[in-house]
Image 1: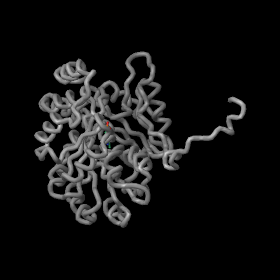
Image 2: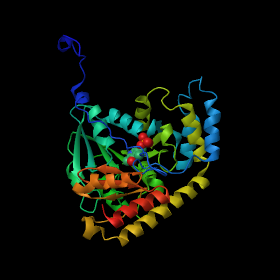
Image 3: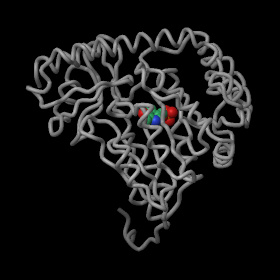
Length: 367
Ligand SMILES: *Cc1c(COP(=O)(O)O)cnc(C)c1O
């Protein structure tokens, strides 16, 4: 420390930024004798599809040029895939990037952003960056959204409501009828975001069609990502489907040339490779069902006080409470990184079968 450093004037930062909690990314795989696995970030365990990789590499030959500013080819492809007009589509640097644009477009100091808790940990951070106030409503004891309580928590300052469906980290869905009833109670000038990061993994019959709802209701926006089912987490690309004025506001808040040209090319090719991708997603869903069935064979309630609930995503949730970190450490000791959220629980991604089996082993043998 140099002499007199305490006298140096400090750059003034916004108070909201100074108090910001850091985003905790899922920890990387740990060094381990044998294969180490990362089940801490809900990534897709499959490598990129050969055709997608080829498109990305071909695009990389042109990285001395700026990407298409409007992501035109990609927007067209998303519009075709989702069956909405192109002016209802906006893209961003991951759906977290799109979400940040949404918050910027709707909420500032004095405004409220409402969401369930526990939910996606980016929500409070993005809200705080905008200088808005986060208002949270606890999940119900079965890990689902308490939409009645959320409707009651709406005030005249509420500008944005985030509904994570399925919810990260619990895997629970909001069913169609409950969602419609909730939307009927939300004022029409408050934007509701349906964060569908895991939509491709959902098999529940009563899961709502978010895109259709967004066509019906001008205050509903759907968020999707290429990071999870599509396996392009490393390229940072996501999109929103919303009424045209909302989509336009999103474009206005975008970082210029934010979606790089490798990401644009890979995402377009992915959307054209639906059959191959759907096959992989089906295999992951089948693996989820295998793991959930195995979990049900373990006396989680008796041994750990954990009640197992359905998951419709590519992960499962164990409400281990005070033992969350201990469990994560036991998994790490056998080469598997999971995601503890102390003091609530642990989220475990459905990954390679060997990795999932190791986690099951820890729960069977105790930790
Ligand atoms: C992973 C995830 C996202 C996607 O993030 P990207 O920025 O697209 O990688 C969005 N919402 C939720 C709830 C998630 O879990």
